[in-house]
Length: 284
Image (cartoon, rainbow, N blue to C red; front, top):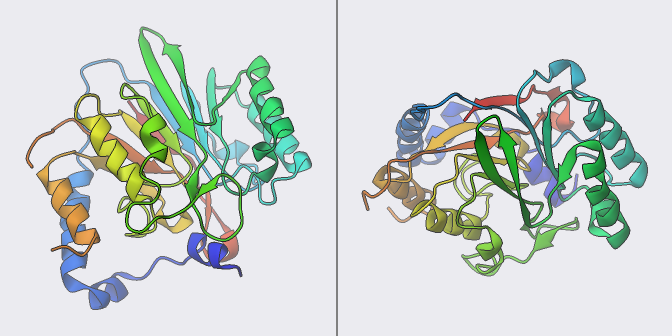
């Protein structure tokens, strides 16, 4: 198994293993996760969002529930060939959701070529919005959502859509492309310290999200990539979160109360990706 596969397919440690390795980190994470499960208050009719990622050629049609928006946050395929991508496209077209938003992942190598990009953007003719470092606005009933999508992740071995890690910041300028008024953020990889097996995500992405939240916290951030980090978290953007992130950084400002729902929607997981998990459903 390659170094990248070893990280992505890493088996989640047991609670006892986590506690033994770092007791203070384990106790802090339990408290933070309990706070993170508190749902944000919504004063309007919810929009049902179906979140999936890292299907890697797996047809999960029977597991996909109805909803208003379907989001796939990358790694549609295993090897990234045109044939695999055509199968993924045919599968997505068959799903009934009115709005389908898709990005690529590090396995979807053909989509990094000019020919692949041109083809993927033609999917809009069939109701599939493909995003690559770009934004698109949709209307669901009486609500508009500005959605930004990017397939990029920090460099690790070979793969598509990767950028270099630079010290402790990971290419800090690359995420300035995320609009300040983004309502739904879709990235292939997670922000650092959130649903990333406690440290495999991108620090620059986390920093940019903190910047955005000062004026317009996204309602939803969907990602995958780290299969073992699958889950859902309500990020409060307050001092409790800041303290948690300092603990993750091994360091040891009460400002914001609006929450972003963060979702690692990895479908496959477990040893050799034998586990198949259903989509994550979020009302926003």
